Image 1 (cartoon, rainbow, N blue to C red):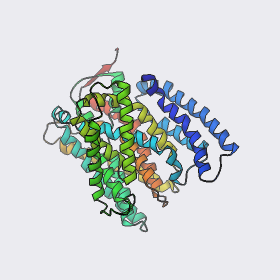
Image 2 (cartoon, rainbow, N blue to C red):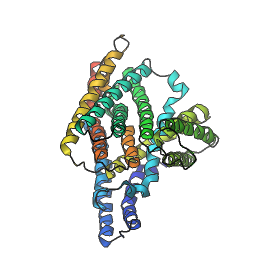
Image 3 (spheres, rainbow, N blue to C red):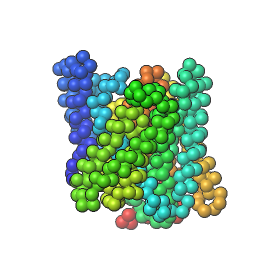
Image 4 (cartoon, rainbow, N blue to C red):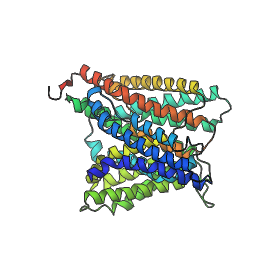
Length: 440
């Protein structure tokens, strides 16, 4: 089982190039000799890139305090470039949509598992309050700034479109990551209460990001798309529909998770559950992450084997993460205006950091916790990538703004993956909770 999961990203990556020519053929272009030769080239390049990332970057993680991920985005971009160039139509990726939906839904379900009653009961003191402050202020600041930036800079962009893109950036800004903690634990001996507090706050931040993304998606959907001829609901009510679908599926699938389930059987059952839930979400044009989040919350609270389900999800988290990063690179299209993109990225990073600093400073006014905890909450990670990929696949507009926003989100994740471990190390050193290296 471990060997399968370890090499799953490589296996998926090797399949992607072979899926592109059939898609082009279905579109009427045919699979040419050049496309086949490109696919073979991709096989070699992708295999080499994966082995390099797996064997070299994993070792550099501990030595240089790196969170891996950027190298897999590069692999995905390389796949897309060598297998026929950049896609101008997102429909070209429909062939691998089930795989992407599975990987994204995996993190929705996993973060839903963090919403169990026992999890809240045993949460570190102040974790929920910290998560709320660390979510609300950055989301509000980023969303408002992005909306007015789009409206002032590009007045021809409709109000609804600007609201959706601003909300997407806001959702990405509040996603968290506990991977910097894992990187530091490989090298240092850490003690104290800050790390459990930060881990819990980051995971609750992911849940907040998924809920906000779900609302953004339904507000950006055409009023009658995916509803057939007999349903015509206001857009915002589809957010409630997504929550209801997740809850109903959670109750239904609770009956299928037996207490005597083997690890392999549980893994296969989860693949089927997430694929079904994500497929239902895409059919209704609602957030697959949101549906799976609610589904996971129901499972962890109702299923007798909820802790085993969570354990299986956590053991398979890394392969699904690599799939998402590769797909994020494959879906990336260079923006037309690099100047606007660079300015937006710089503003995004600065505003996000400033809002987090203010939020944790306010949270520390009572003296219960440190006022500089934002230094341990800079990472974005898997849910931010899942947010970007999910929206990218659902948004079929051709105004070019989606490329800019998508680039900002992915670049922000890569940037914060680089700086978050060192910022966290500085916080732990100042707090006296990081004393020496492992084995020292």
